[in-house]
Image (tube, rainbow, N blue to C red; front, side, top):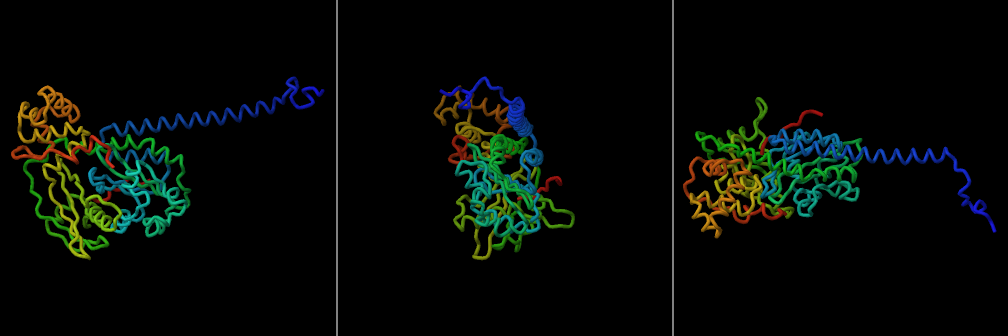
Length: 416
């Protein structure tokens, strides 16, 4: 009968110390790397979360976040837009891409592209999509890549959408250019891990625009109409439009304001016409000092699109205010009733709750909005100093924060 040594199981036989030590070093090194990578990832997420909670305005917030994202997920170009949370139509772009000189074309193609479109990612409950991965390594399936990005040597695109129970607050595209490699699953996982924090930061940055009501003494917005063709080239505009576009997006000295917000609503109209998306072709855009305007696009004839710009109505502003501060459906309803001037007893009767419940809701609203009294709350929410006349309470859209939600000149980022 053979001994253990004869069949290779002799436990008494000495093992090579060189082999054992080498194996330990190898395993220990791999384990150490994994631990170090995990620690770095956690610290990176914590830095991102601190930036999102810093209370920065929307431009500063995005610039700081891009600096952090670049450290964890390398990229060569980017385009980051805020969106109307209700329509998901973009405005206030922060962009550093090689095709800024043909902005209308880029925007039009972006809205007509279905691959990793921000609205499609949101419907699929995904925060990140990678072009190469989504197309089976055939980026030509993307209209945006086929007709534009390929010309600029784009290797891959990582697309992010920022949504919460209140709606869609923005979307971001990160481009890698030749000779860079494509994004991988690790990159997608890192981006996904901070999507919720960034979403909250974007929503909070929008709420800062309601810190004070618009100045009482200001020029009222006159009739503003911008006429575009199907390529989004400007054909004509009213005198008032040019004046207000300069406020919407200040141009460089001697230049003309580039109506990126107008391009976005017009591109959304074209997307609707091509059955790419069904959201309304409109967007509410913050100008300055608490002033919001609403842009809408409509088809005039087969070759012309009219974009109108007007001051956002009190009802639409109220709905936006409630969403930006993440108010519940019941809290939003209460503010709507409050705008009619009712007292606590009347509010309780309208909402079929007790007066104590109304007071509890008000305390919660004051805490979320940092308001000190009803008058100050309404002044900021409605953008007026008086509140005569009924303002409709937010209904289906105002309640968006209770359930999951299915321009301006490009602000250039600091050079890399």
